[in-house]
Length: 405
Image 1: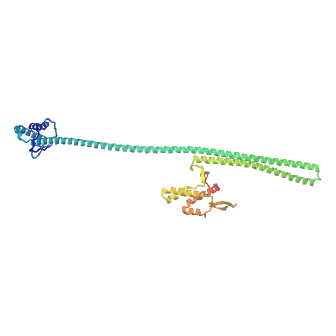
Image 2 (image 1 turned 135 degrees about the horizontal axis):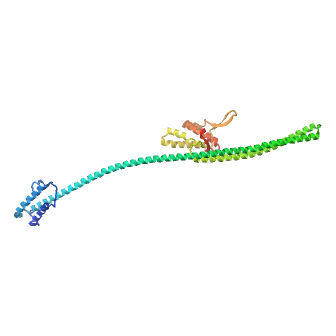
């Protein structure tokens, strides 16, 4: 508060005295408490810092002086009294604020310590959780490995069972083929036996008829007609021989017709059995994992292109490039206008066979660009497709014995 000296205050002297005693009374009764620390003395001119006890003693002393000099209280200016009261109140307020600041500082320190403690506990828990997480990951990896091994064992068992089933089916097919072959052989032998029996019967009948004729001729003509008898006998023999030849030819034609029909039926049955075996083996064993399997005749082996492309191109491009080149040459094989073969005679019989024409422009270019391995793979596919499907020029499936390769 600021008051001018020439102004008259609105507060009376009794109110000033009463107001000045309130802070001191509050300190005496313990309303305002403080630690034992230094405060600014409001009654000292040099504003020296004093302890709490010293400040109380100073206040008591000044208060006692004020009481002894109470008759002269009116002589003290009211503005000084108010100023001193304000200073005292401000000192008490500052003391209280300092106490509150210290308490707040203690709270902040305690909260910071607790926060630090909780932070360390959280770090410890986080480390424990990381350890648990690593253990769980290890357990998951172990479980995944066990599961993969179990799946591999199950797949192995299934494959073994499939192999056993396929082996049994193959054995059954072999038995059926043997039975069918035996039946066909029996069916072929029976007409042959009948034919031989008929032939022997015919010959016997002819001999009987011949002897009968001779007997009748000699009986009728006697010895004088020997020449005539001989001529007639020759004519009859020739006629009988012609008849026998005609009968034999007709019987042979009938027998050949029957045998051709039987052979055609047997070939059809063998083709059906072969096609069924190819389909069954293709579904049961997609790859070449068995002795007897299915081979795609006329298909280029892509391994040669892959190995060559891996040597020339990066790993991420090699497979794509190999697939493109293999597909291109497979299309060339199916082209009916391209026939890179030449005729060659071999053996004592001078048998004509078709072999690869090494002077073909496409094959020469292939060998220069891709090397011997790719050249061998393409020419092998050419020979296969020329042997198994020369008219269609497309890949066909055939039963194949991989052990004889």
